[in-house]
Length: 284
Ligand SMILES: [Zn+2]
Image 1 (cartoon, rainbow, N blue to C red):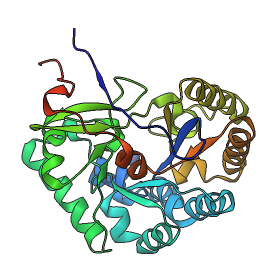
Image 2: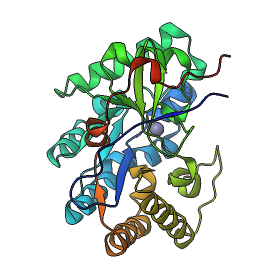
Image 3: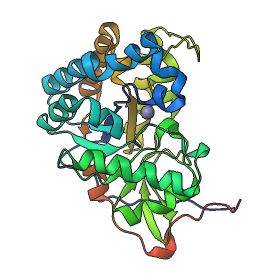
Image 4: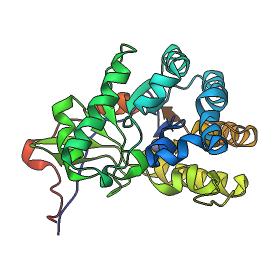
């Protein structure tokens, strides 16, 4: 049995009893264009993606500013190229920007060269904004060994794509340990609120999701661990869902002493393990 090497932290800053990372994937039109050229003429579904950077994002940024919270925004290079004002607004709010592919291509459909190109194109797009990300989240949470192995080479300090633990842990990536800041589908808005005519969706009751997210917050608080929530401006940026997120944040502050932090801030606190201590993945 492979034993996971948990990351060791000196404790959260101040008097915090839990670390909370609010993270947002600003996918825009990229996932549809990456799915196939036939989507380039499907204006309704493209416009649904465009709602994220064009409308939902400003609601997210306003809410975070109101609560004085900084978050982490994972951005495909295509979004950076086609919605530059979104990148400017995120950076102006003091938030972290992370890598989320270029055309949001699932790495499971790419060979090693294709995966490298997606990483390089995404980096180049962010560099045009003067940004060099240290965090990576794979598009669609589908991460192949080739991409994982390339991350240290491109200067990444952490990944947020894998789910072997609900505490931060060390993964083997290439020859170096790489910090994993895990998320989970249950703590992501998309399975509850994402809907397209091509993939369907639940369009769940926000009150039910609010309860799930607060219960997970209480679990994280009891264990003094990090909890990462993953959202998409295209979904969470709808009016009724921003109201839900507002209630969730307010309730967290009322119940506990959360440290709302970016993934980069959390990664900076992790004590480095010995290279041999990282968690080897099972072969295959
Ligand atoms: Zn995405």
